[in-house]
Length: 469
Ligand SMILES: [Zn+2]
Image (cartoon, rainbow, N blue to C red; front, side):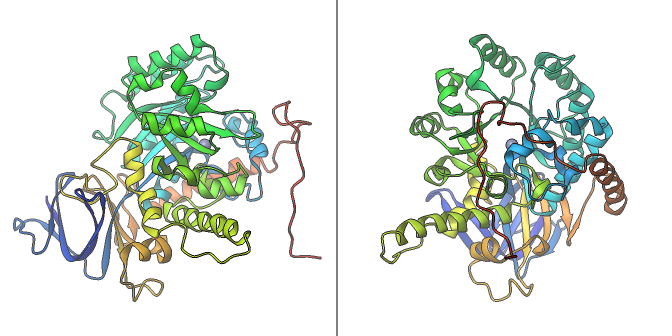
């Protein structure tokens, strides 16, 4: 059945100028999974579902280009952690993984997806490093399908005890047959450590991409003093990954070198900036603001902070402004203009994610685009009085203002409540909360740090601020 929103404010996309176009008192028609008309007094069949959008803002769904959803089980476990602690205590090689059954992985991955869908994220690139057994790989994927979200499920097909990367991907590909969420879930590869891999290992990974027709590739990139994941875009170019002709997204890259940035632009590859994660863990972030033309936004590990892109876009916008203002003020003179526009923060969370995934039909509201839509209530105390819908969304809205969410024309949130494919939120919440508390109870403290990070890099004390004297 067709759906039509009547009389809303639509943050649409103007193809000719390649820019946001705000339409007021307008209608938006959805037929199947696609937007088929936008404008005044759109004609519809008599059986169409009509939704009054008076005082509502219609936005494209947000696109999250870097997540590790299984870690949702750790929510609030490590609010003051660092990246060094993360590696040893909460990552996919840490002892904590012994606490997870395959069923736990399903539940906590689905919990992470529900959090983000509730917050208006409709598409995700998952760096699925839950890869310590084939059953864990499969059940994580099943959660992706069950969520009803649009997903690029990028499996970390690494050699682990008892299983090779090839066996892992083969096993998942077989499991996936006829089980792709109605075409919403695509398969990709999460490929870390390229910088230290032999030519033979690189060829193995390239063969995996081609033999399974994978549609995206992702790689962590740190740089700077971090001894892992450095110069990945440069290495990818020298390994001729451009010949694979698929989207490649490098997460973080806060210390991208000039050759990394050149590789991104030359081969149309993207960074996924994860603002709150990088601030909390201390990845360091010196360069991503300089390459926003080839960047999108991601969440990373939402167990330590919010899982919604509204918050990420806002934090990123204001932190970029802060850096530029401080640089200007250090001259002893007065900043003359704002360093970054709110529209660019909005585009990083929407259109840029779609560009990163090479999808012209996502991240925008236009005729022919997929109906991945977020509807904000513009009448809440924090929203009332808005005239600019982009500023209202990026600077004033919160998740509680999101009334409806659609993915491919299907309701995933309706009137402020999640729409689950199966079961109900209260029952799911109870199951997830019991599991999370058990896992956290079994792992109350982080693992001790060694003498050196990864046995090779010195630690340094940081400035510590407190509220006590
Ligand atoms: Zn990550």
